Length: 309
Image 1 (tube, rainbow, N blue to C red):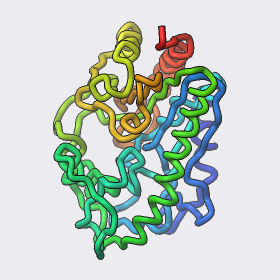
Image 2 (cartoon, rainbow, N blue to C red):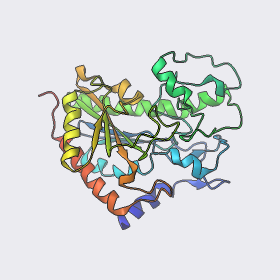
Image 3 (cartoon, rainbow, N blue to C red):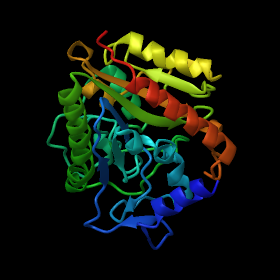
């Protein structure tokens, strides 16, 4: 438990408290961290960020905003660099900008002016945008409006330039480097999910989630045999696992998964009840330690797996 507390302290001490008690990002602070790898495996955590930029200006209190985080995911995978695994982490919160959405997934009704760039017309994607879960969130998972103001076009573009572009550049760079070194890459997109889906969280409100959901967009972003190997490994460890339901994977696996080129991208969702209190965000030490051991063993299994043969 002391090791867990030390991790938490080191993670938060870099942020200065703002007027409302939120960790606020000074203008020059880097919003993305990268630890370059030397293996074929790359991990990224796009939703565990806790540094709330000053220009957010949300209408909700910090404890409400923080419920959107994939809280502590970066701690669960803190072993990755020691294994030579590439690591990319967002420090900005997903409720400020969601790096797992395309820049076209924007609800233009949030803006005080006309958006000059393309927006999606994909009917499936539009379902999520209308729930308030596009590039810039409109509602919390419970359907509460996040803003009491319109957002400026330049404000959104600044978020994209400061957060979205550096994050995607970092993920692409790490995957390219892993593939160049080994002739293949295995990219795990790391997430957590609530025990039960809220009204505006997914297209399946009220669904009680399995311990893990493994997604490869129906076998289009990774060899399904690799995804099924992950599912089998987790089941052998005593976890319940769903495959491509209710989460298939979104932009980060869609954009970087090219299994025909031996670039495999898989989204892994972990049920938060396994390692934390969803109300207080406090870690459950015993649950955390067991889960982290199993995740390390999973990554070690992937390091020993060549999907080409």
